Amino acid sequence: MKLACRITLALVLLTVSALPALAAGDTPPQQQPAASAANSGAGLGAGIGAGLAIVGAGIGIGLVGWSALAAIARQPEQKGAIQVNMIVLAALVEGAAIIALLVICFALVNKA
Image 1 (cartoon, rainbow, N blue to C red):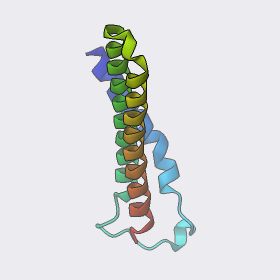
Image 2 (spheres, rainbow, N blue to C red):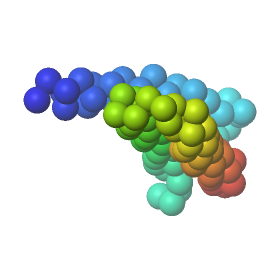
Image 3 (tube, rainbow, N blue to C red):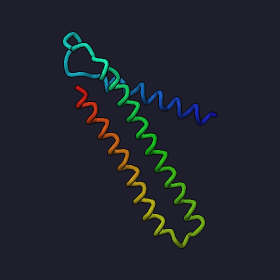
């Protein structure tokens, strides 16, 4: 229960801290056109999506490291092969997170 509360609080704080950066615009407020219903929540959605992508990558890398340490503890003689596979899997997880963030950035740029 405590872990769920901490994760929820972290996601809320991450989303709230990202809102000012995503809400910044190039034009002054008096010259902005009225937001259409299609893109009115684009900044909020991008903030939540970016937060979930980063949290997912963190959990994935944590699980990879945890499994690698457990495998090394069971078979210390296979340490080299396990470390190589761990690094490859961590890079794949991190690559997926970066691709998710790029998709979010392109969605924000092309929302007009």
